[in-house]
Amino acid sequence: MATYQNKSISEGIDWLIVGIYAILVSIGIMCIFMVEYKPDTDWLSSFFSGKTNYSKQLIFAGVCVVVATFILLSDSKLYTAFANLLYAFGILLMLATFVIGKNINGSKSWIPLGGGFNLQPAELCKIFTALALGKYLSQLDTDFTKLKSHAIATAIALSPALLSILQNETGLALVYASFFIVMYREGLPGTILVVGFSFGVLVVATLVMEPNLLAIILTLIAGAVIYFLRRSIKRDKGVLIVVLLLWVGCVGIQRFAVPYIFNNVLHCYQSQRIYSMVGKDYDCSLNKSAQKMSERDKVAKKPDDYNVRQSKIAIGSGGIMGRGFLKGTQTRGKYVPEQHTDFIFTSLGEAFGFTGCVIFLGIYALLLLRIVVIAERQRSTFSRVYAYSVASIIFLHIAINVCMTIGLFPIIGIPLPLISYGGSSLLTFTILIFIMVRLDADRQMVLR
Image 1: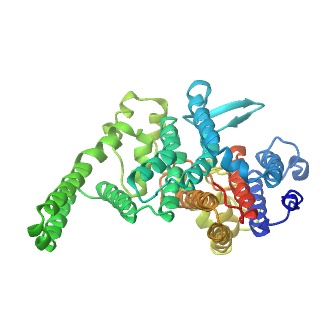
Image 2: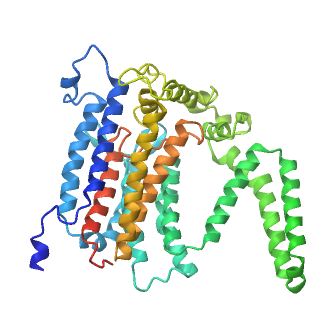
Image 3: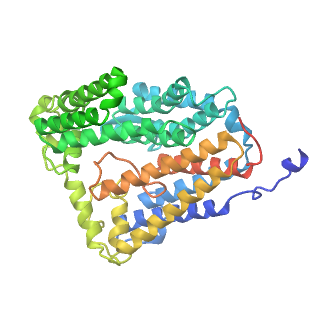
């Protein structure tokens, strides 16, 4: 025990992860600087003024260094001991936003802290959910082959997502789906993922195809399945009932459920963004929220793919090698909305071109691969589940954000990890990564 107490802070630390983290944070500050740089200002003094977004991000990075150091000095057993308590605290914080929350860009998911700073509990709750899921799956009495365990783990993962949806923060809610990747690694049946993917394909097909044609195709598919399973059906009529129920369910989703969601649940601007992703136009006269003619709906009547079009122009203008550092005309000209947050990737694309983007995404790939290596070398289920949670969260953020900027995914407002401007986001990913580093340093311990 004495040996453990006297260990150096550097002992067992995976410095490759720390180095990649530092590189990405530095790239993020550089990207924000490229977006906001003005030739007539003293850039050196402005970096320490605290008035520009890049100087604020530098301050956030300094705070994150302190937090990361504190985590590395902590005891790994703390994270298992307080996992459930932290999860409950995170849920309470999210509930508190409905009472004391601040409305920012139509989302009431922020708690004002004073001094111009705001806390987004849904961001922090990703950490707490990863800890709680690891805690549950590492319990000796958890049998993850049973439906009850699947239901409990799903409830742990999706409860914060439901609250995020109620806060009108659908982007962050979607990120919680990343925990299904973790559960699949721990034994969740692949059929569940196949069903989820099939549902997504059905929704997309509903948007791009004429309703009657899609219904006919689904009927033909059901008929073909019945034909090929005719021998099984002769032995067991239950197979026929299952096929018919699936056919009725698919047709019902296509004809009634999807149109109802787009016309009555989603806002007009949300429906427009999803339709624009598949190259279709959405008729806002069908949308219940648009009929109320709120200000946001009026804005949505403008071409809603403006952000994406400007983003594509900026990235495309970079060509193969890019325009060069501080030479981008699209991003610095403020043509791309939210270019220091959700669309920060455009500044990289314009300045450093396709080559720079490939190198940048390669750094992310190295980070994810290293996290997977760390996850697989853990003795503790808790540490392995947590590390896979970190990898899944980061991967989903990267995939959605990059696809969003090039028009392959609807605009849902999700930051690029360690790159986009924002204290809550940077702090969340810092805590996520360094808790994993701390657990990995003690990987010979079995934590529950």
